[in-house]
Every structure is written in C-alpha cells, then in structure tokens.
Amino acid sequence: MIRQEIKNLIEKSIKELQEKKILPRFDIPEIEIWYSEKNYPPEEHEDYSTDYVTNVAMSIANLIKKDSVEIASMLVEKITGQEMDGCMLAYWRTPGYVNFMLPNIYLQKQVGEILKQKERFGELKIGKGKKVNVEFCSANPTGPLHLGHGRGAFWGDTLSNVLEKAGYKVTREYFVNDYGKQILLLGKSIDARYREILGEQAEISEDFYKGEYVKEIANEIVKESKDKYLKISENERVKTFTEVGFKKMLKEARELMDKIGVKYDVWFSERGLYKKGLVKKAIELLKKKGFTYEKEGALWFSSTKFGDDKDRVLIKADNEPTYFASDIAYHLDKVSRKYDLMINGWGADHWGYKVRLMAAAQVLGFEQKLKIVVGQFVRLVEKGREVKMSKRGGTFVTLKELIEEVGPDVSRFFFLMKSVDTHIDFDLDLAKEQSEKNPVYYIQYAHARICSILQKLKAQNSKLKAATQNLKLINHISEIDLIKQLIRLPEIIEDTARDNQVQRLPQYAIDLATSFHQFYRDCRVISENEPLSEARLALVLATKIVLKNILDLMGISAPEKM
Image 1 (cartoon, rainbow, N blue to C red):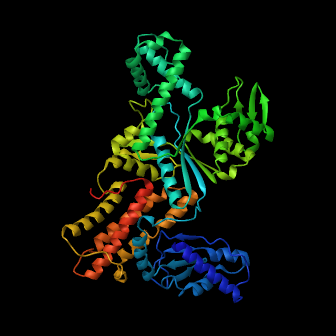
Image 2: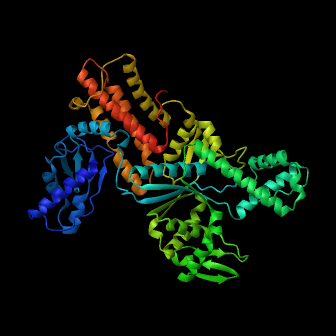
Image 3: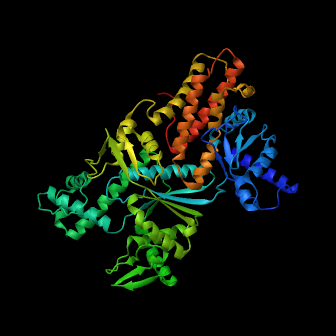
C-alpha cells in the first residue's frame, strides 16, 4: 500500500537523521499520512501536484522543541531521491507539512499489479484473522421492514464485506426479538382484526399495530380456519396468533434480505436466552458485582454510576425481565463465543439503550470489545415533499415498496452515501433517474462502457490485447489521474475497516468513475499506435477490476450493458 511505503520512507529518514545526530533520539510518533483531496502545487514546482500529506514534522517539533519547518526541510532532503519503484518527489509547506508526489514510473507499474491481483486487489491482512461479530438491522418481527431497517441492513452488510476484505473473520448476525410484550401485542392486534372480519365487535386499542399487514394475516387465518379460533379462550387465541404473525413477519424479513443480497450467518432467537437460563445468569453476575438494588418491588441496575441519566430496571415488579436484561445476556453470549470485536448497528429509536448497555459492559468487562453505532432517520422525498404513508406499513413506507420502486442497487447506494449516524433524505426522483445525474447509473455506466470497448474488439476479431510492457507510454494527465484513483482502493478499505465509515465507498466509486469518464473523453483507447493502444487497454482492464471490486464491496451489480 502506498501510504505504508511512504511511512517506511519517513521512518527510515528519521532514523538516519538520528544516527547522524542531526536529530536527537526520541520515539518516532504515530505517522499520519492522508490522501490530498486538493492538489496544491508547490510554489517552486508549479508543474507538480500533491498526492499525499503528513504532519509528522510538526509532531516531532512538539517532542524536541525545534522549528517544524526546519524538520520538514530535513525530511524532504532525505526522502527526495529515495527509491519507491521510482524516485519519490517531496517538498515542504508551512507550517511544516511534508507533501508527496507519486512519480509516473511508480504509478505505471501499479497497473500491472492490479492486473495480477484481479479480484484480490484491495485485500489486506490488517485484521489478522480476528473474529468480529457484526449484528445489524435486527428489526422487531412485528411488522414489515421499513426504510430505517434497510439503511441498517445495507450498512451492516457493506461493513462486513469491507472487514472480510481487510482480513477479519466476520459473523453477520440478526437478533430476533421474539420474546416480550411487543410480540404479544402483535397477537392481540391480529386477534382484534380476526374478530372484526368475522363480524364480532372488536376494540382496536391505540397501541395495536395498525398496518394493512395485520389485516392480511387475519384474513389468511379466516380463509384457512374460518371461525375455528372463536371456540377457544382469548388467551389461547392470542398466543396462537402471536406465533402465526411472528413467523410470517420473520419469514418475510428473511425473504426480503435474500432478495436485496443481505446474508446472515446467524439468526439469534431472544427466546433462546430464556430457554438456556442466560438472562438469569446475567442478572446474577450483575448482583455479584454489586451494581443492583431493589426498589418498589423491582430490581434495578445502577447505570447512573456510568453516565446514564437514570438507573434502569432489570426485573419489573411483576417479576418479568426487561428487554435490557435480555440484551445484557445476549452480549454475554457473544462474549462466550470469543469474538475479538462486537459491532452493533442499531436503529435511531435505540439511542437511549447505548449508554445503559455500555454501562453493563463496563461492569462485566467487555466494554473494550463492544462498539455501538446508532443510525439516524430516513425521509423519503418525492417532488420536494416527504412521503410518509404506506398502504401496507400503515404509518411508514416499507423497504419492500422502495425496492420495488427503484431496485436494490440504487437503494443500497443512496443509503450508503451518508454516514449512518446522520439524517438522510432519500431523493426518489433522483433514484429513478436513468441518466448521469444518478450516481449509481454514472458508476455502472463506466463499467458497462469498458465492457463495450472489449466487446467491440472481440466482434472485430481484433488481435489487439492488453499488454503491460509499454505502460511507460501512459503519461497523459487523465491517465495518471485515473491510476491515482485506482490505487486508492486498499486505503479506502483500510480506513473503513478501522472506523466503519462506509460512506467512503460510494464517494470513492463516484471519484473513480469520474476519472475514467474523463480519461475516456481525453484519450482514445484504440488507435493506430498499437503499443499505446495495448497499454491503454491494460489501464482499461485495471479500471474494470477496481470498479467491480468496489461495487462488490457495496453489494451493487456491475452490468456489462446499459
């Protein structure tokens, strides 16, 4: 990876300066190197542009109380001319930045490397095979999946892809909330509609689920069993309908996940926690740690000692455990499965749970292994106005309806474009746009355009083939800019694996497609100059590989025709 190579050059230069006693001995600080989004030409080299920047000279200056510009100048003198598959070009800028420019000879060689690695390009070993559990979406099986669930599903699936590419061993998990009052409420909601269909007077309570899907389930029961269930007690009937409704909602969720390409390794049942006695064990552990107390007939956890705004109930006065208690037990089960890291992707309505669960994690000793990411709300906007209602969802638009409207590729990309912890307006009009205004179309068209070039050569029975022996002929600014984008993929994967900010991927895909379209406009791929044509074909094939790799990471198709 380029950043690592630059980092190695910097470390080598610092050590040499220390050995010559030009710099005193000190522990080399963390060297931060970042890609330069803006190409600032150095004042003395107007033909050059910046590719990477580091502030290491300023970090050193703080350690040894020396002028940062002077240190930057020393480093530039040492680095310039050193080999990195070609001479590295470096210069400094005030107040002590060291800027790097990648030499063309180095960039040209990277095209050959991409062609060698193919789909493996971008694979890293930073994960070192560590076990990561990514739990995401985990919607209550009491209704259809809505837009927020879709956002969480695409985020978790994409993050899992990135972590796997970075060398982690990932388990994708869905926690099924199949225990408690919300499930029972589904059964009561179905029961009311069932009785209503059969002509009985039924009160539709304010807290019942009211979407069309409840009526659908009730109608299916009537169609299959008629008034059979009116002959049993209400409790038995609600219990039966709870199971029918829960199983139908879970089945629909699993089918929809398959349809949108989101795969899970584990579907974990909350009921299983109770069957195995894990909730009771979790509560006993908290008691032993001395962070529980009884009040008003309930058992409380002292979460305020860890920053929560109030203490939380573990067991209610009716002796029923709370969702919080089962959540603690669930995470202890994850810990028992020996994960090195547990990442939770939660919906916006779970923000209040984060502090209390982290408090429990601190008491039980797994807070260093737990990361919780809380998503934010999604607004569906059409013609400048928010779309709020859904026939089937009732008070929300279902994910299935959105997928039917714009397709999984567009849905994925639009949800991934912004950080999951920020609000998003999903522009339905733009999502339906079949032109370059739509970023998904724009990126996929780049891949299809490459396939068209290759297909045209095949149709012409051309003997022209991609070749790497003449890559030194690739010198046009658009060619060089395209290569610079291609070789960023490993860095995008590394950064995303470290901080889970998956919005980098769609932005990178846009940048890459933009560079390719610019190259295509500026540089004729097939010409009478056979050596140049072969070199440009190699660049085109390398672009196809990287475009396919980044689209695969996002779970988006790479069409050959559009």
